Length: 626
Image 1: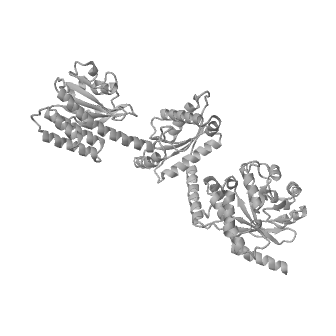
Image 2: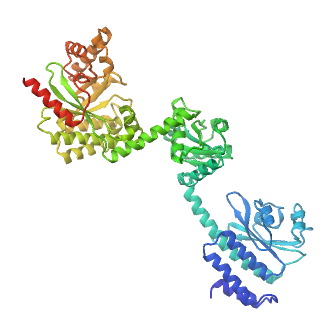
Image 3: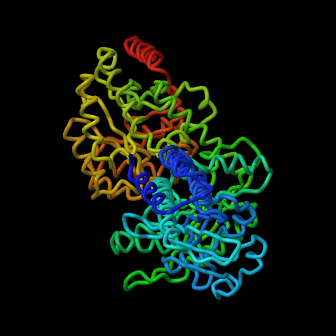
């Protein structure tokens, strides 16, 4: 026999009930305990307890309310004889010093007995309710947590006549309260677990899991209803700089304050989610115009100084807004569009909204599909680099090949090589893509060692690869696995604002140089610090960008002067100089007259598959022999 059953038997032995036997009471309690032990909802469990209580005390109406500690109000729980209309009226009751028996009980966290509700000032504002539901006296007892004593709810008992509870009544009430508290605490524990799983603990906004769980449902619901719904992607401006300058604790305080302002300003939002470190995603049940108005109001609130320790920064945000229309857009597609809007807003200086129109949204989706196709192409080995010859302007003989990105993936046939590389860099795929092309070069060098003897293979390396601490190790592993020779490979890096002459890219280049690779600076003359690169980086070659070459054969004096100057800089620093983009014999002749030795371009061949490159190489060698 369990403790609750023993307790009820002890109560029943000292309290006589003419209309209900002790056996019937025990069966009623067993039903209650079955609800508590099973998977019944809180409402079902509390309703069973309410009916049990009404069976024990004739003529009484029972009402059990649950205290929502986050909302700060009492919620409908379980009822016996009282109708749904009563439950709806008291749902949301805010505890106060004079808010009926239940509201006052929750406010005081102690039992409240109203012998006559019409004579008790606590019920002054509820007389119409009492008349409608025949309530003359009311007893209310708080439900408290067994762990910390916090308020879980209120057990209310109402009578149609003036009545004072007896000692036996109160003993029974305490028993009902005990059972109801078990149900309420179990429900709260479950709610806390769900809440913690779906909310960001710092800001109290939703987290990605909440967005992924409820976002698709909201999108489908609003599409089905043909009701407007807008998604907003919020990216705080300069938050990282503040975090770095003042520390993570100050950064957390600032972020929490910002999110409190967002929550208060956008009260009608269906979802407010912390998507990343300083990124928020918001779903507003309005069209684009109204969404923009609300977000601009939010931005105005954010600009007001927010006290964080001894500083009071003004926060701005870059926001992208897209309307979830009636087409079959999924959550990820909407996120991609709104994110693109926030990127555009930040590129324009930040602290603004960018609303994506239909054309812009279509472009985002197109690029998203391309990115998916690119990742699939990398995964399935559909990347096959093409080879473009490097030749001597003096002898016309092949000197090597540059490997250029190409793919056979059907979804990328309309995409430019430039777009694919940019997408790979933006998405982080560039490391896998670049290593794949490099390994292709290693394997080609080993497999066709005789045909490629004496030639170099040039492979483009992104600066984003160079700043990775594991890049040199990955290259070394691939070199060892394939048995290739580093000295036969040129690693070509393009001038970039990220090619820091004193940063991690320089350290990686130095290590690659020590491994035996030769290094080339691609598109020389178009970047950010050409002369500094020549001085600080361990280069072997520079490649003059095609823009300087394109008009040199047409008698353009300025282009010839620029090419001569670039050549002189390379030669003065002991570097081999290669001209790119040579398309006509006039250009080749002019470059040779200036003193250039090597070049590549369509004049000799477009980029081609390895098998075709080997055939081209054989023909060129045969011609030179003859």
